[in-house]
Amino acid sequence: MAEALNDATVDARLAGALAAWSRDGDTIVRTYRTGGWKGSLMVAMAVGHLAEAAWHHPDLLVTYPGVEVRLTSHDAGGVTERDLAMAARIEGVVAWRPGAGDGPFTGTPDDPRFAYVLDDD
Image (tube, rainbow, N blue to C red):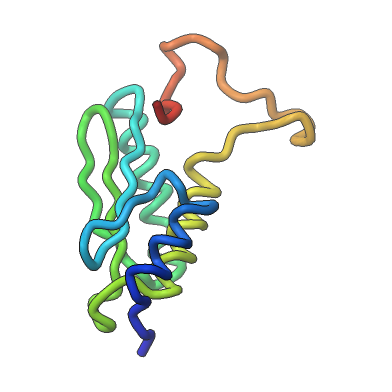
């Protein structure tokens, strides 16, 4: 069984590469804003695929304008390394955008009709 991390450790890890995530008691939380229902479903399905492959299942709240992802390890009674690793994997997939080194990938057009995951404000 994984061991729950103390609050200071979780907070320090969230302050780094997982800065878009926050702690809510014994859970870490991230809301992805989307461009609508289609975008919300795409995010939920991506998270679902990652969670199933890792056999670690978050709570999801899927709405028209976004998806809230909540991670905790119930068996450990709090946030574990497994939750932080899952958050990093989700972030790497859902928040990924093509860059200069991504070859033929140009990304979606700069047009609101094609936006599905919106930048954090």
